[in-house]
Amino acid sequence: MTIQTALVQGTKLLEDEAIPVPRLTAEVLLMHALRVERAYLYAHSDDELTEVAWIHYGRYLHERLKGKPTQYITGHQEFYGRDFRVTRDVLIPRPETEHLVEAAMARIRPGDVVVDVGTGSGAIAITLSFETRGRIFATDISPAALCVARANAAHLSASVGFLACDLAAGLRDRGVDVLVSNPPYVPATDRPSLQREVRDYEPPVALYGGPTGLEIYGRLIQEATRVLKSGGWLLMELGYNSLDAVRAMLQSDWTEISVAHDLAGFPRVLAARFATVE
Image (cartoon, rainbow, N blue to C red; front, side, top):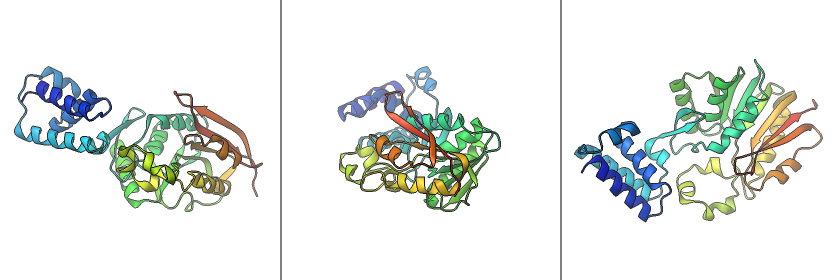
């Protein structure tokens, strides 16, 4: 079995089961089995696979055919040009979340205290630690997720402080300049209709935002009014069709409300400035 034959056969198996981007997926899984870069596959296409490599590749294909996301098989996902470790304890970082990072970058000043609420893999917080001059912290309710985030920060040599708590419960009043979050926003009632890769593999605590998908937004906004300094920013990633409901939660304490859209034209990020100190 040569590398080229393994790629052809793997691609055909994935195609037959309607797995998206079958050729690329086969390449990534074979790269992972061989522990090589993509160029190696084509420079050595006539090389014979070792028995060990074939066993690993076959197992990875079987896992993907059963619905396991490629990122959980390889344990890696790129975000904002950096490689992040991911496990089933954290959501897989999505490209759309880079819009949230960029909206936060535009508002963070040198020395600002910035908190990423519900950090998961740490992708947002770690990216902001490299791309801004803020003092970056991150929270998560899941100790397992925080272990992944800390490992990513250590691997990338990022300066981020981590805190285990529910949303912003562990933060002191009026101590934050910028609060950033990609909160759970999938309605629990949508679970049966989700892709199996999401429904069966990604952590429910990071997916579901309550019966309507809006419940965490309400709690997060309430927490933000406690921890943000006057003039501080709240930035949240938006779920599908949630803009109007979330914007309605922002009362008179909030000004300079703006929305950024993703490349597909959907409202993706809501930013608002806190204007009142009680």
